[in-house]
Image 1: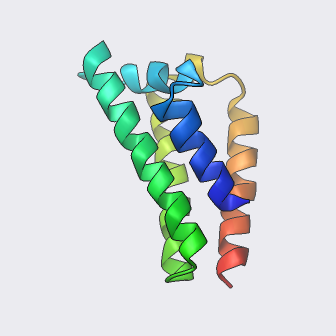
Image 2 (image 1 turned 60 degrees about the vertical axis):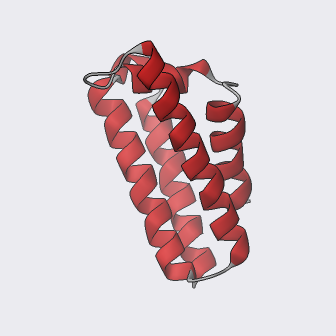
Length: 109
C-alpha cells in the first residue's frame, strides 16, 4: 500500500499532472516561475516514484521509513508555509500523513 501511495502521488499527481494543486503549491515557493515549478514538480514526482521502488525492494527498511517520514514532513511544511491557501484541509493532510508515517515505521519493524 505504501508503495502505491508514493507511486500515485509521484507518477499520477505530479509527473502526469493529474492533480494540478501540486504544481500550484510548488509554484508558490520563493523564486518559482511556471517553467521552474513544472520542472521541480516533475523532479519531486520522480523522487516519489523512486520511493515506491525502494519500498517494494524491502532493502534497508528502517532507513526507508525514516526517509519517507522526512519527505512527508518536508512536503507538508513547504505546503503549509508557502501555500496554505492551496491546502484544502490542513488537519486532514496532517492526519493522513501521520497515519502513513506510522504505517511506514510499522512496516519497517
